[in-house]
Image (tube, rainbow, N blue to C red; front, top):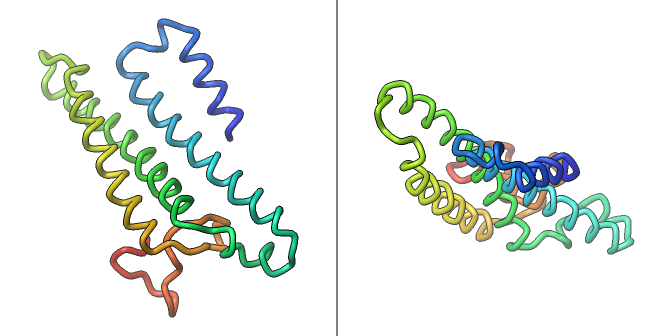
Length: 150
């Protein structure tokens, strides 16, 4: 996944046609996906570096608030940019005489503030999710989802 994201970023940097407006929204989604890939690689490298059976199966010793913040930040960011892409399409069809690129400031504000806010919540309640092999929000007790446990 990181290789594919890197190739897309490389192509975006080398081609002028790919850096025009609608694809710039997808560029930020790819950046968020790349950040999640890096988080997964760092977490799993830390788990393997611990070199004991308990850490390899549990992973909570390698999980910290920074990794949980990065996971939630990148997950919300990636989905937020998808939502911006859909909203941009809707607004372009319903308001054809407005410049679509004028909305990028609002898109950036919404996605990055939302990512930071949800990332802070995840960092405050971090835990290792063995089902996803991800340092994220602590798994709820009893298997029921609460308000902040997605």
